[in-house]
Length: 466
Image (cartoon, rainbow, N blue to C red; front, side, top):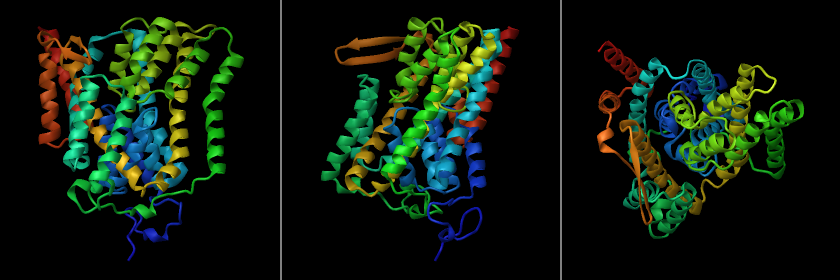
């Protein structure tokens, strides 16, 4: 018995091997819808894809989704965008991966480009500050909901729950570098599976913790046999596309070094951004402010606030850095032209590597999908991911709900704690509303963001009146 295609009604067995298991137009519509809801950092973005692809469309099973996520967590760069590329590849091959990954960042590129221009032209405005005051608490609720959803489905054994808690404590209390946490989680997952064999065995799709049964079987998703010829071709094409724009600026522009400096610096940052945007932003801020002088002290925080309010990966803040830096160091260019060119260049060198890494590695990861040792290691990493997302939730809440924080360093402990007297009652209140909307009323992230942005404007209006 064949399973009908959920969109076209054609039996899935009729699709050619390696072809589209979902019509490309239908998949493109879904990715466009996802791209407009990718607020809230990686946790919120993964939650949106989880809801759309696994829960609503049922195109991909929960375990297959987590398998792809685990691989993307091992890569440098924005894991949510890489997950979009990977799942797009599973549904529609290389075309699907290119479309999914491009649409995932396009709304954010446009939105942050506009906001960067507004910032340069008008600086800080009360209206923008009011919107920030409303949207930031909503993002907390989105991330908390993502932690709840992923934990409910991934932590199906006490050992995995313990591993997730250990990852959270290691990151939050002891400031252990993210790559070490991931490596240790994979090793522990493999070791635990030797004592608890079920950790290395993917569950069937019938259990509640495994999500709804997919309409498309795993065997019908796109797959390619890995080969040396294919790999060398992707590497050659990817590296060429990656560095051609930087080489062009180096050869054609001699009135300012800002384009080449930014292109090379952010190309390097793209391959060391393990652990998400927060893990690399301190390094980017230090270099942008103190080494290159692209930003003034404190402006990185404003750029981060702008990036938090736009869809797409949080690492998109590098576009703001490039825009402001080139506007102030335009050489013979008009400042606005320099700013736009630099922001597009930096966006290109930041995200092209994501396509290279995923399209190169996906066939190999798919081939190893049934490997028990790898499954066990990735199960451990999945558990650690819950702790990582929870750590991001705490970090964001800490810097949204309180105006000031202080560092606590005592031996191995490196902890960021709030100054309790600096608590923000408005932020607490809007966070409560956002949590109620998402957990009690089951509102979507986009609808919740709209409500909280409106509340921020209302509070601003009341304060202005008095």
